[in-house]
Length: 623
Image 1 (cartoon, rainbow, N blue to C red):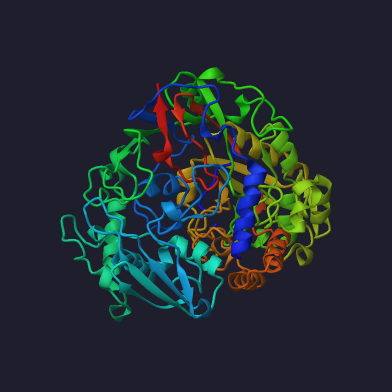
Image 2 (tube, rainbow, N blue to C red):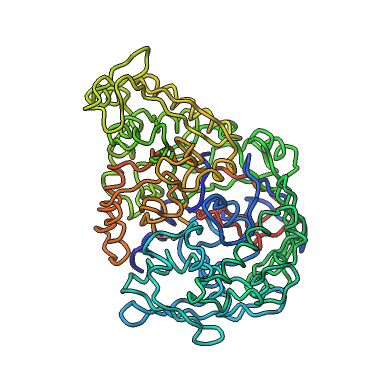
C-alpha cells in the first residue's frame, strides 16, 4: 500500500466524540483481534515475530527530531514503545482516534482564564532508573523546543512554542502554561500538548556518564539564548545518529514505556523486552517482540507463508478482489494458520511537488499545471486494478476515510470521492493548451510564455521527476500507471525509486531555489493524522514555514484559513479551510489504501490502530 510519513488533529469535544463514533461505525473491528474458532490455554511469555513493512527500518530513537527522521515507524511503532508522549491517542482497536488518558503519563489538562491557561498534572509514573516522570521532564522538553524550534519537525510559525507566553512547574507533578490568547481546548490539547514528550533528566547531559541534569537544559532560560539546551540537543542528536549503540547506550535504556531495547541492528533486526518498571497498564505478557526487516513485500509474504513471522502484511497482488460488502477478502490466502485484520489509516496520501526546486518550482507554482497533474491521476482505476479495491481516493486535506466522517467538505465528496479534479486526460490536455502549451514530439511545450506563467520560457517542456518509495510492487505499478497516463496528456514523468528512509531523509524544507532543493516531487506515501496534532487542521503540512512542509508550499489565504481553525470549533470554519485546500492542490492527491494484516492464530488480541500506534503489551500467545 502507499506508505505514510508522519502524522495530525479535532475542533470541539462534541466533534471529537462524533469523529470517533463515525470511525467506529464506518470501519468496524474485524475479528476483534481474536482468531475465530481458536482455543487453548493462555501462555505467559513467548516472542512475537513482527515483519516490518518492506523497505523500512527503524533509524531514529531520540523523541525530538526533524522531518528527516519523522515517520510513523520511527515514532509510533518504535519510540513510543519505550518513551510515552504526554498524551496517547487511540487504543487496541482499529477504530478509535480519541485521546486515551489511561495510557498517558498525564491526566486530562485543565483550562482556565477563558482558555488562556492550561495546567498539566503528571500521574507520578517512574522512569526505569527510578526517577519520577514529573514536571521537570516536561519543562526539559519545552525548553528544548524553545532552543531548537527551527529543527523540530512539529514547529509552525506562531504556534508552539511561539503561542506560549510562560510556563513553569507549579508543583512537583504539575506544569502551568500561559497562552498568548484563548484557543480551542480540543485543538490545543490535540495539536499542541500532544506533541510533548517528557524526557528524563538522565538525558540532560552533554557526555556519557555525566550526572543527570548536569547539562542544564531542564533549568535553562532565554537569558543565555538557550545555550545549555542547544549543547544538550547537539549531544543527544549525535548519540542518536549512532544507531549501532542504541541497545547498549546508558541514555536510551532509561525508559518509561512498557518496552525497552534488548538488541538493535542497523540492518533492521530489533528486539524489545518488557520494562519491568513500567508504571502504566496493561503490562506486557509476552517475553519479547522481535522486528524483522524485508527488502520487498514478496519476501515478507514468503516469511508469512513459511511461518517465520507471526505478524505481517499480505501484499495487494496476493489478495483476491475485495468484496463489495466486506473490508476483508472472502478467502484467506494463508489458510487456517493465520487470521486477517484490516489496517486502516486515518490520513491522506499524496505526492509533494517541491515549490522551491530550481528546475520545476516555477512550473508547479502554476495552479493550472497542478490541476493537469491531478487530472491524469486515475485513482479509481488504480484502486480497482492495482490495489484490488482495498482503498479510496484522496481529494483534499481532510481524510476521506471513513467516508461519512464529519471533516470531509462537500467538494471532496464530488466525482465519486475524487473531488474537483477527477481523472480526465482530455481535461488535462485542455488545461495546458488553453495556457499556451502545445505538444512537440509528444511532450507539451510552452509556445506562449505570457500564458504559460511566470518563469516559464518559450520552448520549455513539461517534465518532472518523481521520487517514490520502493519495496512494494503495487506502489511501483501505481506510479507506472500514473507516468503512462501523464504521457497521454503530454506530461513527461521520470520515476526514480528510492527507499522510504532515503526519501524521508531528503524531505527537509529548503530555501527558495536553493542547492538542497534537489528533489522535484516527493512520493514517500503521505500523512497520518497522529501528530504533529490529531485534528486535521493542516498547520504542519501546508502552513508557510512549517517543519513538515517538505514541498515548501506557501499561500497567505491558506495560512489565514488554518489559523481560523485554531480558535473556532465551528465545522463550517474547518470546511472552508478544507475546501480551499482541495481546490488549491498544495499536493497531488493519490489513492489511500488500507492493508490486510495476517496474524498467527496462536497470537491473540492483536489489532491495528488507525493512528499506526503499536500496542503489543496487549498481545498474548495460546498453546
